[in-house]
Length: 403
Ligand SMILES: *Cc1c(COP(=O)(O)O)cnc(C)c1O
Figure 1 (cartoon, rainbow, N blue to C red):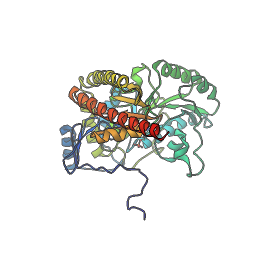
Figure 2 (cartoon, rainbow, N blue to C red):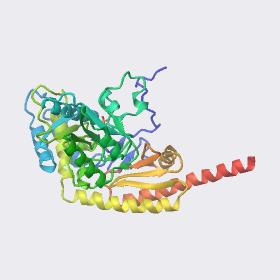
Figure 3 (tube, rainbow, N blue to C red):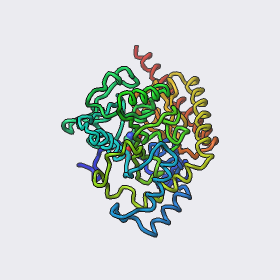
Figure 4 (cartoon, rainbow, N blue to C red):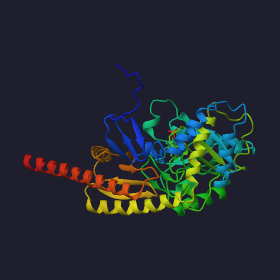
């Protein structure tokens, strides 16, 4: 019999009652070190007092009014995002996929209003993940997400990951732009090298097409920069963000230059909930924390320390971990065992992580962690690796005895 909750998720049998900073706590009081952060969402941990206060204060005033009227929180958040980034304008959404939908529509409209409506294709990279709407599963191009949902939305040719030659060759009269994640998250913490990102910017400029970045996972400080493209010193024309923008409150945004947004006039796009007063109050409070001048250096320095410690762990457990990848506090362990085995072994140690493509375990802690949390994480990681080695040894013994 089908469960009342549509069974589209393979859930772990684990539930939490409350959270405190980087900890999630079960009804029984068991404390789990949360290095998944709700998939890079809870960047400021759980129950951060500043975010709780912002939500409660706004909740007592007004939750929702509609985009029929001016929304002061939107104007303030947009102004702050514009000041902090390449962008001149911002559209607010409720999720990452919707931010991408806006980005895709905007890129198409940009060419359409210039008299080239045939330019509607966005070239993507293999291993991409852009969300679960019909357009974004087509953009991601992963068969497992497209299967059974009818013809894929047209307009998303894909090239192999990191293959700039193929990317250049794929540009034609139908190309509107290039859509990529600076670091693939779901794809397995696969980093586009900074020199490649610069080259892609040049390729787009030479072809007169747009660079659209999906920073839904990499954005809001995760890599030690406010946005990952800053590591390469280039800027996109359009950028989708979400995840950490609300620290757990559902909110996303599509940021763009004035030129890229030239087709998006009144009536061309909209959302009932997007940018409502409640979401804006929380996202503005998130920005208070993210724009604090000590915040990004803290993420960058902890990220470096964590990566060094993980490299040592990989050296100590070569049968479990092949390599360490990523930037800032967006790190991945490429595994030699099945990645889900490591996720489970860590869960047994009361540490939460997230699996990803390419047999990687993602480490995405809240960005407010301290060095002591890294030490706790390393102890749990060591114990989990040792436990997996013990079971590998037991297996070897068994097969040896059977021969
Ligand atoms: C999570 C994610 C999305 C989709 O966001 P939703 O809020 O789940 O719609 C899109 N792109 C990237 C890179 C993501 O990590």
